[in-house]
Length: 420
Image (cartoon, rainbow, N blue to C red):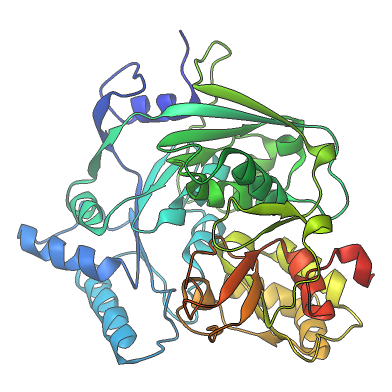
């Protein structure tokens, strides 16, 4: 019997020739990631170990992005702790203001997430790098401390669910709609501790930005990771980025899956996830004219240049509704610069939106767009739990950049075609 992608990657990082679901293994890791929220806990635990060096200063990335630029004294202290640790251990890939970005946009951009690797991060959306054929997964901060010290972690080999997407995408339907539709179908625990393998002609034709959006939200279905095969698009994306050699792994034709789920994407229209779960999805045509107070376009899910271009297509020559605050957050400094060079930032500002420095900001209820009691937001972020973006009695609706931009103009849930 052959192996799936995730099984091959895990086996390659152990002393086993083959592994099978349920097996517990001790595996080498290729990259360890921490941010300003999770790294301080890991740093404190690392110091308790009593060693004077990290396992490899070139295999650790530290990205203060959740509360930066620092929103208060506590966040400043956290960022300071991360900074001092990076200096003390001479961490090569430390990115702060001026160089930083939202971590899951930044690492692929810097060529630090590569096919066939195992990447662990103290952030659940580390699974984003599955779009690059990496076994990337979120772990606890204490696990990050152990990984920084030893370069190894234990894993239970997950089963794999194969998702096959076929047909032709409808206008304004992209990676965000596909993953929201999938989560709406299987539920937030539908892939619990399973690898989600995204395949089919639609995935092959999807841009790298779209693929990263899909892998990013694997965790919203309970997935351990969200993997996509390495192909020519992947290699082209990495051609001038990759900092290391890499070895991709594709599933064998006779690999065994826990389940195979097929979708005809021609039946999928732009999606909206209603409060308070990402699985509470509806097609935009059935969403109704729900008034919103804020539109957020950005985050590690949809803060890439393709996302900003789509939003700009909708907003160009129009004005944000007087009752809506529209916040645009580029994923990295490079994306921000490109948005300026392409005239996208000017379109946003002329429309009445505000363009923020790269930050996680409002996604986790951090800063740069907190909701008051009774307010509603349409957001391209990944979670809409109770109180996720502010007051417990506020509401978050998840959607693509196209739908969020249409919201911003109309002031209520709307299909992009309604504003064009």
